[in-house]
Image (tube, rainbow, N blue to C red):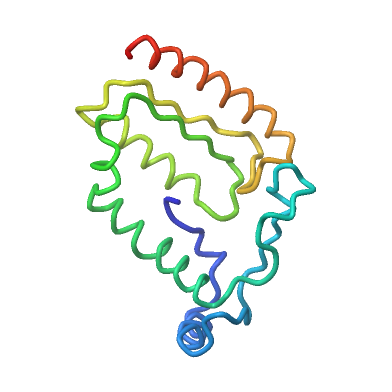
Length: 162
């Protein structure tokens, strides 16, 4: 994740209360997001994924990660340093993602393409009208086609190198 839309976060006083509750009742799901795994389960009938309200401790950790740690890592170029030298990079993003800001991903991708040691192919595929969970939407066809085309191209290149 490269950030989170501010509109998806509750007001600051609510966050403060939830952070306190997460220390007292870490496994309870009070006012936390509801996980709808049927949106991304593959196959759709799978029951392997968690469904229901997130435990407070999980919600608190994800909030801290997406609101503080990752933006700080991006500003300090730590994320870029971790991927410098990659042979290739594919990023697939929905332009209507309601959770991760598209402009954050675009800015990060632009900075990655300018890294000195990255000589491999880098590609950002934007799924028109794609949301955060796009596996069961029309855009998933573009996603799957793009992914397999990328894998076929780059897997064959890797095999030639080894």
